[in-house]
Image (cartoon, rainbow, N blue to C red; front, side):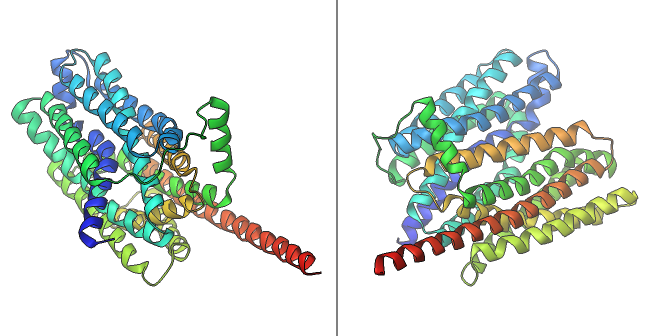
Length: 413
């Protein structure tokens, strides 16, 4: 594949993947403005964020079978059109309840891109190249939490909260055109693929039975949950515990996001010499050490701002190695069910991430301990899943090899 074509392809795949996270981060600075306009509380408006998380988790399970049945682009077009229309509807929302419903539907549209991107990468690239492309995708995705809140805050203060959703609508139109002109269809429609509930459940069950999938998908999801715990707990830790200003908090957020971006690009270079199976355990082990260190220091109660930033930077930079490699390996065994595998992986990741966010918020006590405890638990859980899962994968591989040798011996006798 020519470099120019490959660049355009990765850019468009990054855009359709990042549209969901961008939609989350961009309107956060507008909460107070929305609450004032709708004559309600910020807490009521924040339910629109919860509805978005529910929609983006649930919706992925819908698109998986559709992508396997109708090809990759048709369901993607449908999802982007839903996203575009509901983004426009949010502009005219007159109540928090209407915004909550529209945000749920907006999430159902946005998650089509997340599922389709992973499936298309699996269609187009080998496992090693798959991980490299996902590392490049991290560059686009990780920029979202840096740009989106800043842009959202600026346009809200200058033009009002509705301008956020006007921009998201325009973005959807641009992405829709980019998909049409620059993204090839990577999977032909499969008329034999049944969309009956029993067949869909059977398809998901077949994906879950694959040891390589459940090992790397769940290990990756547990590790990613640490990132969600950080997002949920960092405002309390930095703004309340360490009393940093909102501007300083933004700079800290950008620094840590920059570490994640840098790590993902280093991962792309490491893949020239090492494979994904070698990189993941090292990254998870380092993440465990950082998580345990952060928890122990928080438990002692005298953790400093510099120490917190340093440990979080180390912990979350590991995600730049874990995400692309775990995603590539979990998708590797599938061709026919790649859409369902992508949906299951994404849905599990979002569901576990949402659960850890709730845990951090529920146990919040004005210290770094709840966030540190959840982040350490996520890293340890991920590492244990990997250790047990890889043993199962090796056992299954050796058993298959023995069975094949027995068949050969019988055939030759």
